[in-house]
Image (cartoon, rainbow, N blue to C red; front, side, top):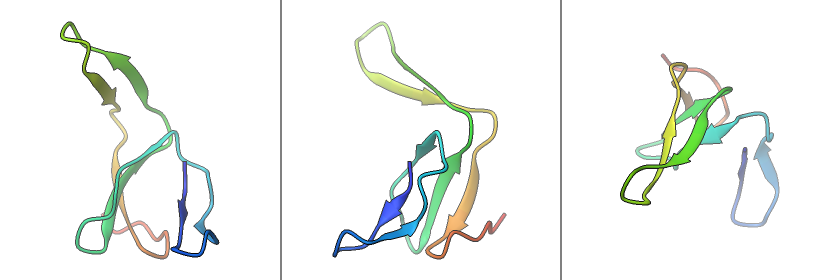
Length: 61
């Protein structure tokens, strides 16, 4: 996963296994993540490697 702007231009390349939406200029991403359905059929994503990036893709934590 990666990020594109409102014009469809890629601003952060598709290098992540999973990427959450931006909130207050930051987003949580992971290079390795596991996606599954829990017992109630809700989609879940787990990773031990979450970290935060800014809108330019720079790691901030």
